[in-house]
Image (cartoon, rainbow, N blue to C red; front, side, top):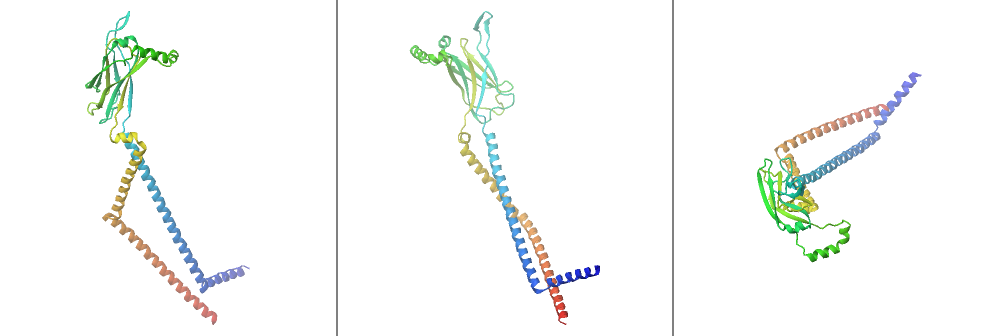
Length: 327
């Protein structure tokens, strides 16, 4: 039984080998090989196109995000904080324990920062003192008084000082009566008060010194009869030129800045591409790649020649078999 099975298996194998060696079968095999080669080439081209597209998309995304990041970093480095606000806590000496009258000028010390810098070097600032004063009889009789501001560095050396005159806005008794009658409902409920806000510009064009940055401010009100609710200091950055455009037109500036960054990055990429493929180093790299491609083509030609030789050998063997069958 095993002998019959062995003979049957051998006959089937021999028949299949003979069928494969027939001219028609060879044509079908060649056709199948051609279709497979074409399909493989198309798949390779598709893979190459997908790879190139992925590389282009990835590079474009990285370049765009890098351009946006560069603009954001430049904006927060180049544009300083717009306003610095500090409360002014005034101090003074009274004449004696039984009398509440002031015997010294009200003064205050304001510490801007414990660090080396808080104001940007090269940026111009306006410094204001905002006084909240009641419309009391004492303030009305006070008239004009002087307010002085000193700017010192960390070691206590005077950097700049300024003094400005201040007084309440004048209102006649008739205007005062009319305003009181008109605003009497809100005045009775405490929504409004009889007070004035006096905004005094102490420095209109102050620029911090890099060697002696301002860290401390000293305020002195040169009168003893003043009555105050509160005093606040404001340091406001006065933007000009490019800073003015970037701060007041942020969207337009962001678009223009990002486009400029993109142009710079694309120029750098093109320059790198040129250096890689059109210089001596790039030529050397291309020669290596071309040499490897030629070696691959040579190997493919050898394989094709071997296939042709095998095919010719198989055809010769097939003819010998046919001659034997005819005999």
